[in-house]
Length: 415
Image 1: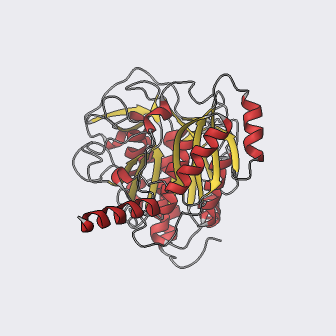
Image 2: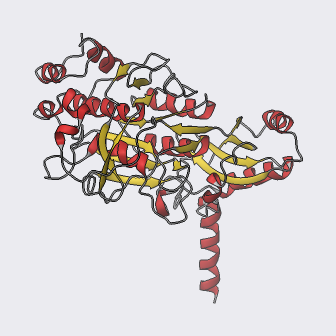
Image 3: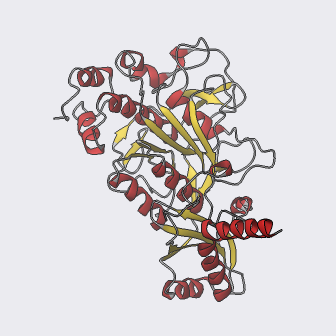
């Protein structure tokens, strides 16, 4: 009996130290189209992050790849909720920044500006901001058509960039790319085995199917298996793809999708933790302080961040406008991108073993991410400035000639 009692005390003590229990209801993050209007993102310095204690599970993967909040950080989060009469929604340790990030909902009975001002003055709080919404980028296109025939010659981007020639020198092997988007159909015959790691940090759909159009289409451009007798070919088929589902469709089966500050922060934090070399962001929205801090952190660690520039009819050029981010358009955007890449009628993968034509800077972006992965296989030490200078030295064109030249001079930086 004493042994059992002692064992229980040890277990309870371990739980208090590690904070393994995570009781956040992530399904509420996407519960309504306007659900973010009265939600705030609040951060505070989390002294339990990366703490080296016996049995501390804070920095290790748990079920479904989620990290647990420590009991200390959960207690602070709950105290803030009680102090300001606001509702706790979700919490996550943003380990890359050493802070705990909490989502609160402000009741209609309380004025939002005053609540924000009060929180900003609280000595426990590091930052306060409104929850913001981001959209994946795509242009309207004709009614859905499914293509099951493997017509490589229909891949206009693949052909115009001379990718088949580039693959003689590089396929992106050894380059880790974080794809932050909607869900990817990892069982698509052209993507099966191509996604090294996938994690969902967004609300799960009611049917539990994470195979969604936008993310699957971006993944196909980037990494569809080559020379397998079916479908299409990806730009960097040997790259290691980490697929983070941080966005979700507006409605089931929709190409249009949205994300928010919280889900994107979770995905960016994971991408940094897992030592990604490239982060692909085929989305845009309003300026966001927390996401900027995370992207700046990624850039400071030498991660190449590539983001889509929205079309003229779309608003919000963030995060493509962050200094150091490589901005990609398909041409005709109001903001000048770092690169113009194919983004019109791009044949790519869609869920349920199908293919479709997609248009938008969302699909130009993985063309650039893929070509950069090919270059990084040859030049692992190159940084964003090196890549931009090199590709711009070729008159801004991503061509077979550019990579052919690079393959013959593997140990020098671009001129």
